[in-house]
Length: 424
Ligand code: AMP
Picture 1: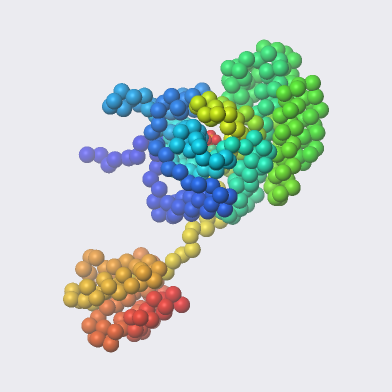
Picture 2: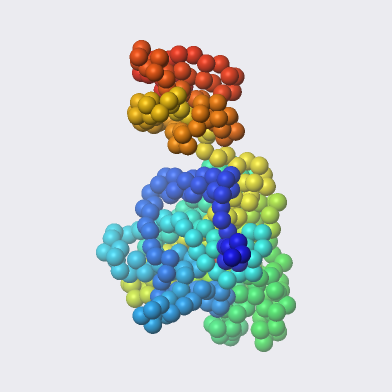
């Protein structure tokens, strides 16, 4: 039989790579608890109808869809927001607002595999449901900022816009919603010519072209430019005011590097307000993104529930950390090997191993029944820090031999002082 491979676009994570993922996931979890988010665990498989309702054509075409044996149309989740919105209209319906929900896990999209783009990838996801206020939008950006900071990423910057600006222009110039979605999808992919071709009105095309030119790092100055550019577009003006409020809160509460880009769009269709993405200079891929979606929960049968959220791509954050070589995998723990000298020392040795584990040390017990010299050689290869050698002679005095494998020194240590000695 040929050696099995993973399914195309899906990966095994082993060794250091797995460690980096674990670090990113635990930082994401720590960040969620710093901001008062409660973690939920939802199924990987959801009804197709739920997942396709509002995500947009782009995602709909890339879902892993199948019929289960009960003839139900289901799909692997391509993101978390639909599942959390489902919860907000069912199990969490009567919870006091706002709801702050965190989740982390794998999601699935039939993307073309390449570095940073997989068919199974991990996201850490934060949803804040029940507030229409700009401080809620600001909170989602601040969470992302806190996570990037806690990971030690350097030189990251936010790209921030507002979907209401483009939609405001398009709708006032008579572009229907379906065409708007198609335009936004192409703009998200930076296919600007294709996007403009979908717009019949010449005036509207010119407006969009002009909007694409506006971007800047000084938020106040850029907002002023947008305000005067859309002065005769009522809805776009309101959207710009809202964006300005969000930007003000962000800028005044933290030193967050950002570029304001009003023509920036995102692939998901359900956005209604502020949207953002985050980048580092070395990687031309968004590490995360999010935005406001005020109509989704209502569309799922809940009451009017404005909401805002974000998702970070763990796979890409891991690449960013490796690129910047700042991957701080969890502090290296001291590793101990417990080796019984003879067969009849096994029970005593196992008892000592348990005591060391109870004291918080990482302990590998010799399970291969090897002779001492072989076991020590193996411990060395596997970068074990200390060997605890359990022999009859020392045990009579309640002691064992502790060997420091880095400097090859050894001494006899009383068992009740062993954990302390290893840690010091
Ligand atoms: P989205 O759910 O589309 O808002 O994406 C949120 C984040 O997920 C992006 O910013 C990426 O970091 C990550 N992401 C999206 N698609 C992929 C993919 N195919 N492979 C790896 N990461 C992805």
